[in-house]
Length: 230
Ligand SMILES: O=c1[nH]cc([C@@H]2O[C@H](COP(=O)(O)O)[C@@H](O)[C@H]2O)c(=O)[nH]1
Ligand SMILES: [Mg+2]
Image (tube, rainbow, N blue to C red; front, top):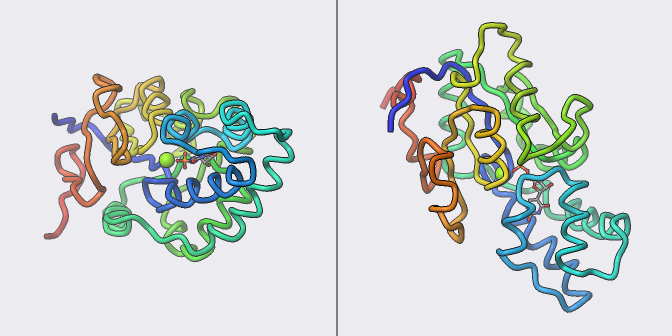
């Protein structure tokens, strides 16, 4: 499928640019171990992309943990503090972002993270994240009432390009999570979906423009963006 009308790009972060989804699984399973619980894919896929406060509430319920949400957050934050600072970029993330930046295509990130966990994850990637025009941290951005799967984060992300003529159909979203695809669809923005291997890919039919295995497979000119120099 081709769509040549894209002028601006919004990137998800966890599991899309950064290899953090692997670490979220480790962190959450470590908390579960104390209570003999299993952090299954069926549970994980429901919270991926949500604001941290929402995902914590939902996880305590779904995993039936004998903890308050605050007690859960205290435990999981210890895991994040230990695991996140050394996270690497995912394949293709460096090449695509530097390419778009070099060609002056406006780019921004829209993540379910709050500022604290974003700082941990990006500590070793400061120069890379400085290439983005802005960052929407849904977890504690006052303009984002509802996190993914609601459209708010992507709508705020598009608005902060400060281009009054920008229409949702001109903004391409890259996502890995079902909640993120739902959010981009609700915002009326085309979406390239790079789902985890475990994901049933038929479930969001009609809500994505393209499904890829990694960012490395993306061909910019399919969306009217400048081609790689080769
Ligand atoms: O296993 C998990 N994955 C992802 C999340 C949540 O999903 C967000 C993913 O953010 P992004 O929109 O950058 O993919 C995380 O910040 C976190 O709130 C989670 O709780 N548990
Ligand atoms: Mg993600």
